[in-house]
Amino acid sequence: MLYDVVVVGAGPAGAIAAYDCARAGLRTLLLEKYQLPREKPCGGAVMYRGLRILQGNIPSRLIEQKIHGLRFKLPSGESAEFTSDKLIGITVFRDRFDEFLARRAEEAGAELLEGTRVTNASVDERIASVEIKKGGTYKAKILIGADGVNSVVAKSLKLRPERKNLCRVGLGMESDFHVGEEGVIKATNGNPSILEILPVEGRVSYGWIFPKRERLAIGIAGAAAQMYPLRPSFEHFYRDLENRFGMKLTPERRRTHFLGADGVTSVNVTTRALLVGDAAGFVDPMMGEGIAYAMQSGVYAAQVAAAAIEADRYDSEFLESYQHLCVDEFGDNFQMAEWAGLRGTSFAEFVLTRARGHPLASDIMTKLARGELGYSRIPYYVLRKLPRELPGIIQRIVLSSINTSS
Ligand SMILES: Cc1cc2nc3c(=O)[nH]c(=O)nc-3n(C[C@H](O)[C@H](O)[C@H](O)COP(=O)(O)OP(=O)(O)OC[C@H]3O[C@@H](n4cnc5c(N)ncnc54)[C@H](O)[C@@H]3O)c2cc1C
Image (cartoon, rainbow, N blue to C red):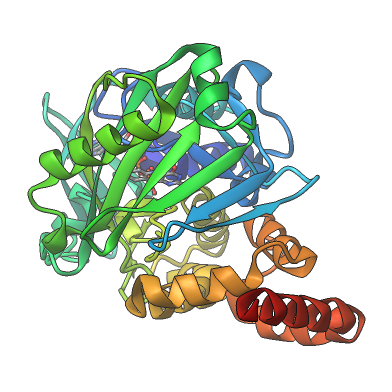
């Protein structure tokens, strides 16, 4: 049977793409190598930017914590906290969240085949095909590669031959730690609605503590070349937290995974095929956040696939509009994040210590997380707000100078 669209990989990018394709009336096949629910190494923080796509249709059983703030611990030991009355994200368990998205696509009409590993993909002017490990081939008018950072589709189509270059990819290790509800309250100083980001001693990388209901998701990530040896660094990191929290932390299962953040500078489109999510490298190069970008790229891929089928155009020039949509939406964010990331922790410390506690900074952080403001619009936003905020800013500068000199 000839499908309109074959989507490889049922993570957030693939499941959202398959859902939207099915809703657009396209004959859609979603292939996933594991049985669902499957594990995914991830902190499980889904920013509101991604949740918007679900229009609030997310079962409450999937929501571990509602997130209303971010706290950055700085190398100096100080911290900068930004909170909001508005929801900026949620924490989830990825196995359950991703299964929900995949079943949602199935209910919308996509055919979901679990335990189906794709081993090769090919395209030509007439057709797109994928080969399956257990034997057989599926054919479609359009192929969407949503099979994560080690994408077989990207490799087969020669869109990402160099992903294994450790200088260009990120690497992370994380685990959930069961500490009970009381442990979560204790570790978060009574406020489990805050995501905490903190430096990793002696490394240009960062760690995180993301509260769940009865667990803490704790992890570290950074440029892959600088992360080795990974396991001892991770152990050192959470042992330090044991001292801080005054409680024993036992990892349930250490998981490690690459991150590729080369999306806006790479080619993600070829004849009859599009890459989405991690397969395309749509990950924030500074923070490694990727779920919301994966979901949004899935939306755009489905939109362009439907337009291509409607127009009967499968050439890369036509499909290139997908890359333009993605670059317009997150290109500036990624470039700014990369720029800031290259300046290291001292730059982050400089900015965050000056911004903390200021309502305008919390407002900006909230708008970024909710997808209401892009990184590159921050200077314009600040300038627009400045006249009203200026007296408060001057007061803060004067007070901080008095405190420093006394
Ligand atoms: C340690 C770590 C922590 C992270 N924490 C966060 C976080 O807290 N918040 C955040 O926003 N982002 C986080 N990220 C990034 C985030 O996990 C990814 O950006 C996101 O999962 C991308 O979604 P995706 O659908 O593109 O890919 P994936 O979620 O990787 O899904 C790909 C799917 O394809 C399937 N697949 C792979 N190969 C094949 C094949 N050959 N055949 C068929 N199926 C295949 C896989 O089984 C998988 O289900 C983290 C990443 C790491 C490594």
